[in-house]
Amino acid sequence: MLNENSGNSRFMVFAIVGCAALFVLIVVLVGEGFVRQVPIFWNEEIHATVAFEDVKGQTRVVGLVGNGGVDPTLVMKAGNTPYILTVINMDSRPHMFYVERLGVHTGILQPGQNETITLVSKDEGTFTYYDGLHPGRIIGEIISAKVEATD
Image (cartoon, rainbow, N blue to C red; front, side):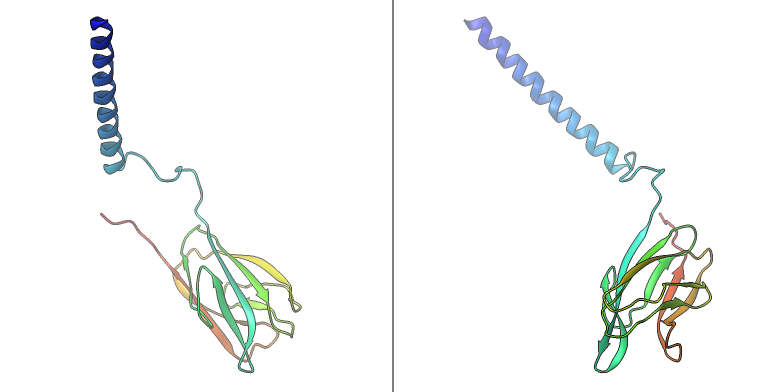
């Protein structure tokens, strides 16, 4: 009986030491950056949602997901990262989201309709967006900026 207890005690000590060593190894590997948070082959995407709305008698774009406020400045990453933008028409009139210089736009959105467009800009810059059916007033800006990792 005495040998059985000493065998169990040794096993418990071995298990505790082994778990502690494994924990230290994981902390060191993750802390030094040897473990990526996402696979290296996974392409980055940025998703956002905006909506046309009537705000105090004026047609405005309101940020819903990924941005906020009225007529928000949207920020996208320059390069190959797609900015996937869902546009919803929550107004009582038809609208068309149009991005100047990128030549990207939704179709004509009737009240209650939505459409998703993909924006990509290889270079840095500022692009204006407006309602393509009422082009007299610029609604907001989209800024394309380079993002670089630093140490």
